[in-house]
Length: 408
Image 1 (spheres, rainbow, N blue to C red):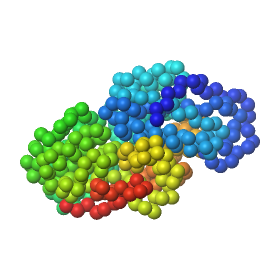
Image 2: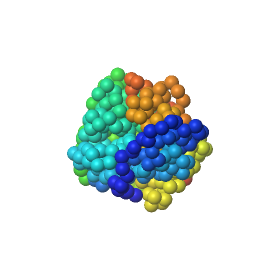
Image 3: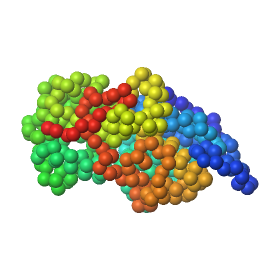
Image 4: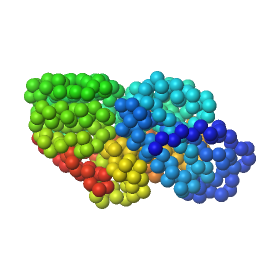
C-alpha cells in the first residue's frame, strides 16, 4: 500500500494561450500548459500508533486519485500520488515535509495523521505557500488568518460536542464518566466537552486519561465505574480502543457506554464481543450509518469500497467514514482546481472559500452532510444529520453502520 515516488520533477507551466477545447469533468478542461503530472503528497502514519487510521487515509486517497486519473486527471494532467510514512511522529513529519518541498515541491499535501503531526506541518505549509488538507476538527484549523492554506475534511469539534451532548441528554442521562487519551483528540474532549455538558445540565462525575502507548486501562475504568455515572463516554483512536474494550470486558462493566467518533478509526466488532457489554453505541459520521440504499448511489460506495476491502485484506480496517475523508481530499482539491481553471494557490483557495454559497460537485462526504468552507472557516460546519448513533455489531455488507436511537 505504501508508495514512495520522488521521480517527478517540479511542475513547469508553458507559456502560450489557453487552448480552445474545454469540456466538463475533472480532467477534460485543456490548457496550453505542462502535461507533467500534478504531485499529490500524502503524509500518513503507515507505522506507529496511528498506523490503522493512517493506512486507511493513504489507501483511500490513493484510490481516489486512481479513479480521477481514470477520468482524464485534472485540467488534462494526471495526478501522481506520493505516499510518505510519518511514523506517527510529529518531528519526523515536519522534517519529511521540508525534505519533500526542497527536493520535489508538491502541488498539494494531504496530512492523514494526528493533530500533533498537523501542528508540526501547518507552519511549514503556510511559510512555503502550499495547500494542506487534513482530517483534523479543531486547532489549528480554526485560525484562518494564521493558516490560510489549511483546510479540513472533518467537521469542527464544537459541532460534534453540541450534537453528542444533545443526544445524550435526550436519552435521559443526567451524569457522565469520561475516558480520553492524552493526545490531540483527547485534549479537545477534556477541554471542550465538560462546559457543553455543564450547559446542558449534565454532571461530569469522573474524567480519566490514558497515554496512547498504555496497554491496560482497567485502573481508569474502575475509577469511572466507581462514580456510577448514567453513561460512560470513551474517546480513543487506533490500538488503545482495543485495550479499553478488553478492560471493559474484564471488569464486566454493563453500564451504558458511548464510544466517540474516534473509535471509528478501529473496527470495534473485530476487537472483542461487545454483546457482553451493556447497551453500547458508536457516535458516527453520517456516511457510516445510512444503511443499505441511502448511500448506495455514492461513488465512494459503488467504485471505491470494493477497492478498500480488497487492499485492506478482504474487509475494512476502519469505519467507512475514515476512508471517506482520505477519499474526499483529492476530490476536494481536484474540484477546486477544475472550477478555478487553474492550479494557482490563491485561485484554488478562493474557489474553496466560495463553496459556502455554491454547491460542490463530486465531493462524496462533505457535500452531502455538511455546510462547506467560507473565508471565515476552513472547517465544514455540520448540521444535526451529520452524526448519528449506531449499535456495535451492525456493519452491513456495504460497510455502513445502521443508525439507531440512543436509548439507555
